Image (cartoon, rainbow, N blue to C red):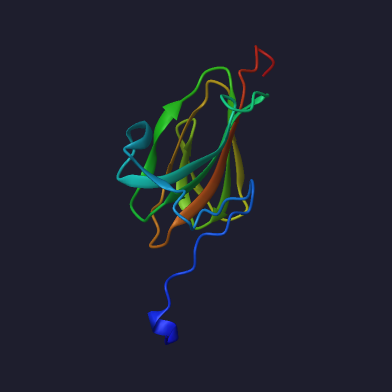
Length: 135
């Protein structure tokens, strides 16, 4: 059998380790009223592992998509820009973001993110809370 005729390799089980390039990212359309369909994977949720962190999401915004401008309540949501560039709206003010930027979205603050580039924008989003008025 030639290499071209070989069946594809089976997925390797690696315990708790998962890989985003192996089908974990799911489409999410009009997130918080944003444009288009972004890709996301909830890597951690307080529903399944209670703690002070509400969730950790890995997110990809293709060109022209966005997370709509919105606000949370008594929690702090932080965006960590891993790759790509975009335009963040932070409490009504536009802010250009790039790889390495860490943007805390403070409790009751307003925020959103748009990918206005020609490349995917990758980010890590984590939310801590509720804070119980400790902000």
